[in-house]
Length: 527
Image (cartoon, rainbow, N blue to C red; front, side):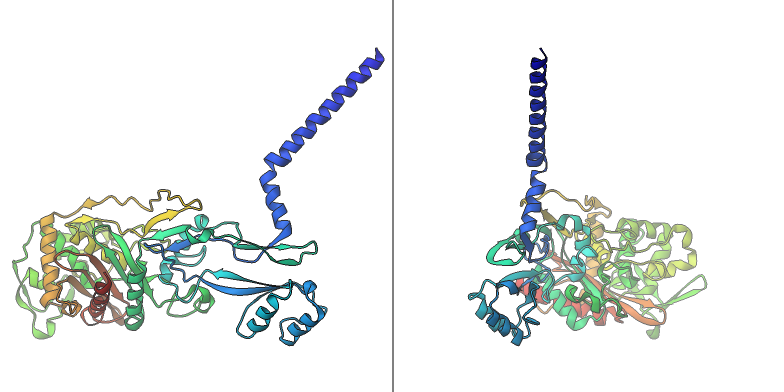
């Protein structure tokens, strides 16, 4: 009996140990299997590239980061002969015969001949190519931003990041790389964020800005879709030289396309739209401009002040010649409540939510902050009002789309590591009608008059296609004025909407309008 008990106990003990062993094997192979496999892989390999990061593309799948490839060499002294070491010491590649540390160096014109000559003769030298994310040909740098810090790179940082190395080399038992045994990952070629930007349009805009704008911004939008085709800011910077720009006084890291500035006379588009929509005037109504307007204790001069005013002038021509007197009269008729209401309907005072973390919402004063004497400033886009160049383009976008607001769109799609395109909405972009089609048509008539014979004449392209647009010269205390031009091309069937902003540039008609003209002329050739 005792013998049977001992056998039974032994049987159960063996059974329990077998069960424990089975569970342990299950845990190691199934539960922890992927992790241990990865760790085992890392033990016998070493990374030779950067962590794979999703790319940022233009609308046609062309990278915007300026990524380029360069060659590197891994040197394993323990695999080299004495004569090979001596040659590398002579070429200042190794320090001494006793230098056994593995080196990963850039292949340069100075060392490439000796490295490539030895590459096929010894397992101690392995040459590979590595992609560098940011290069000198990068475009839209303020939009793209810098890895995890600004722009699209910040907005989508977690999506673009990965733990995968772009390349590995296998090591021997002593940790020395084995030449020829490598593994490369190519995930970054098709994975990432696709923007609405057109690389060719962006290049044209940036080339013109480099020549004509020291500080400012340009935004180009396709009217039907609301997609941003180009967005650039100056002064510019290059991501691969970031440290050089950190303390510069002209703040090149700031994206001026989404910063807030006084709009000046381009705000008259909002005033005109509100007055026509509220039916308190018509384009053919005749006003009188004496060259100035007194509002409360404040006196506001018109550009015609030195000529004793425009005299009798229709509302249409008042917009064309940017008459301050008429628009102050119109603003007083409207009153602060209606002015602020329509400014808000146009999307001013709030972010467009295009997906850039640096975007400002601009500024609109509250009704309680505006007094009668402030109506003069408010009616001509001065004082406590600020808009961004992207918002300025959005104003024209609404007029071109027959009074229907459209939020500008910057993100076209995102492509995950499996090649799928999950839905991503940066903002609720539902169109909203804020003006009747009749009002929008009348505003376009006035804007086209401004370009035909008014302050916007210098914005007309030489291809004889008509445009519509409005200049703005925003006065800044003790500094040069900001220069603006907002417009659309061509007038009969708009294909492009554009805002041009030149910080402290002076006159909108003399400075900003010709930039619009040059960009349109160059884009129209390739469109």
